[in-house]
Image (cartoon, rainbow, N blue to C red; front, side, top):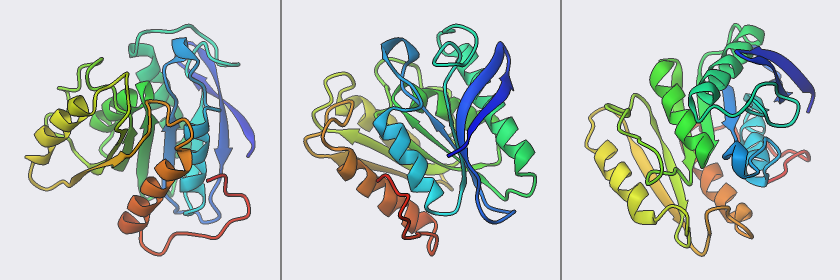
Length: 223
């Protein structure tokens, strides 16, 4: 899990990067929760998402948004953080020029940023949005949503009601040519306290369906 430093709009950004063993492997970018509420790339959900993709042969990057950890800059209410995510994808593509595709996975605030990045980068072919804050941020930019993906939510989420995510998913499901799935983790709160393993089971099952034959038995798995 090598530490990497790559350039962002406001200075260096700190990340952890796991390269794939094959040259044309897909890329995955993992985005963490809200920086002003303790969100970092070492969040347990983010950490486990990282390994869900690494264990399936992706080149995976998770990183700290500006102002978090050793990443330079300061919180920018989403605008700058979207720039950081774009810089992360640019860097990952620069070290993986033969990558055939990219996925985005985000948790809470990171899910909002990830879906915006999805709209701007046509090479992104899949997404995982966990605890998407559909009641706190405007997701109307997903018109239409360009890629198929998965929304996962906890039914005990006191921050974002399940109904808010359901409304968003139902809107996106009306689009032709993409498949939007939604899964609810019973008993899980917004942070998936005590339910990370259940959450990763849902994510892993979805990835195995979309990416058949990629699952590896890895001693390094954190999930």
